[in-house]
Image (spheres, one colour):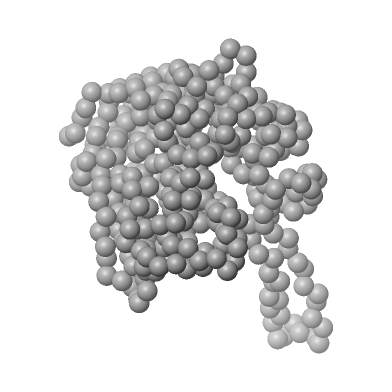
Length: 378
C-alpha cells in the first residue's frame, strides 16, 4: 500500500490551511487508487481525497483520518464517435490545465475557455467546473468511479451525475453530505475536432470576456492564451510569488435566485438568466377536451447574480481585511479570499462570515461557499 509520511494539508491546498492527517496514502496508478480507497473504507474511518487541493478549505486541527492523494495521470485518445468529433479518456489525477493544453495542441475544442482552472481532472465533474460560459457538462460523456458503499467500480453516464451550476451528486455542499459517496477514477470527454485554424467563437459571455464581436474568428490557441491572461489579471492562475493566488478561486458562488427576487436588487447588479424562458406544452386528454385551450402559464427563468458585485457594493473593496488578520480579499478580484501569509483557517472563516453578514444586511441574500469545507464552520 502506497503509504507516505503525512504532510500538513496546508502544504497541499491552495488556501494553505489544514493540519496533518493520521495517515496519508499516495496513489500513482489506477489500481493503487482503488486499493487505497477500499482499504480505507474497510477501516470505516474518516477519509479525504485530495487532488490539486484547489477547492478545499480545511480547518486548523489535525485531520483524524486518512488522506488519499490522487496522483494518477494519462490521456487516452479513443475512436471518434462520429466525424468531426473526438473522445478522450483522462485519469483522475491528471492536471486539468495540462489537459486543456493538450486538447488545444490537438485542435480539439470544448474546454479551452476553462484554461487556467487549478486542480485535477477527477475533481472537475464533482464541481461541474466552468468559466466564461463553458461548463464541463457540455462535453462530459461519462466517468469511471468507485462507490464507497460497495467498493465496486462502474462507468456512469454524465446524465446520472446530477450536474448543475457548480454541483453534482458527488459534491458535499456546505452543511450536507454528497448524494453519492464515490471517487472518480477517470473522465471521458467528447470534443469537437476543429483543427488549428480560425473559427467564430460561440457564446456571448466568452466573446465579451475576450473583447470579440460575433463576426470575429480566432484559433483555439488564441482563446487559451487570452483566457489565461484574463484569469491571471484577476489572480486566478496559481503563482507562488503572488499572494492573490493563494486562494480557492471564487470563495462564494454566484447566487441563483428567482426573477422576482432579482428585481429587488439594484438594476446595475450584473445578472444572467440560467435557463431559457420556454412556453410549456399543454397536453389535454381527448376525453377532457371541450373546445377550449387554457392560457399557458409562463414560468420565469431563475437568474444568476454576480456575487463579486454584491460584495463590493456592500462596501467591501478588493484587498479588504479585518484588523490584524492575515486573511484578505484578493486585491484583484472580490470573490477570492486569500491567505496573505500564515493565515489560519479561523482567520479565513472569520472573514468569510463577515462578508456573508455584510451582503445579507445590504441585499437580503446569504452567499454560499463554493469550496468543500473540511473541519471548518461558517
